[in-house]
Image (cartoon, rainbow, N blue to C red; front, side, top):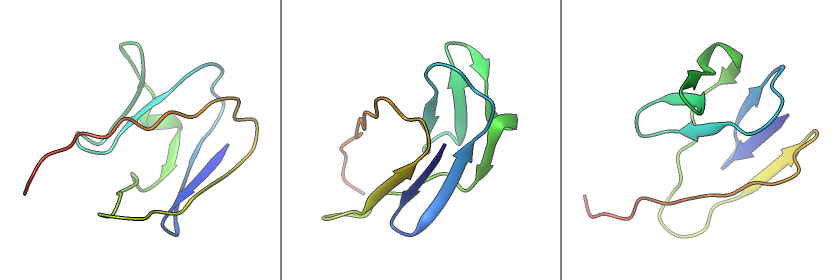
Length: 71
């Protein structure tokens, strides 16, 4: 599948089930198994305010969990 956030795309290839994409620590994983070798592209970054999210492929569910804090 491919996900595009604010015109930056990434893909996860050859994965069945769920994958966590953690842009803060630059890791893609399922449970405790690294999926970094299955990810193609850059880790997504969300802007303050509105963001554009698009996807293609066999995605059945997507959840975004923000980590709110001040910089």
